[in-house]
Length: 113
Length: 109
Image (cartoon, rainbow over all chains, first blue to last red; front, top):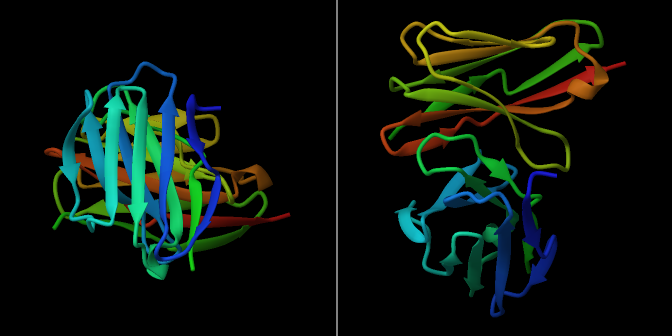
């Protein structure tokens, strides 16, 4: 595998629930990313962290809240989601932020009821 | 904003036929990367192109970067059923990294 793990692999939640997605990379990389992949849109970059600092937030609604406690772990906290937020959420890491090869995790398939 | 387009959106080929997907950017890119995503899987890095006019080969796959660094192509010779999946290009410019919508390849045995 790629050295990037994500849990859970599948998640079903109601609109009033709070849940968190977890990503861990074992590659010693300094940058980590959250992407959203839905059927009707290309891969959408949500957040970028470099050395545990957020360097990019692509106008993502506040119901998505990222957290990067260290360079190996990345979380995406979910709160009051909408059905249109149902998608595959992919985590990725790269050696440095800025055009390096990205290694993707298997993703979390999220369904919001 | 920056856009990275890919054509075609879908391609169905008979096994053994060739396949090409094209990637176009509205802005000059610093580099371009190609990824493959198998059905039910996650994107996997294939290659990165950096230089104007660069051509790289990986077995049956040939990647090109345009002279103006605004377009790229991926060509597969003699497709096999294992080539099935969606091929994404991703362009890097400034501080931004943008994926194209992908080309979904089906290979009929």
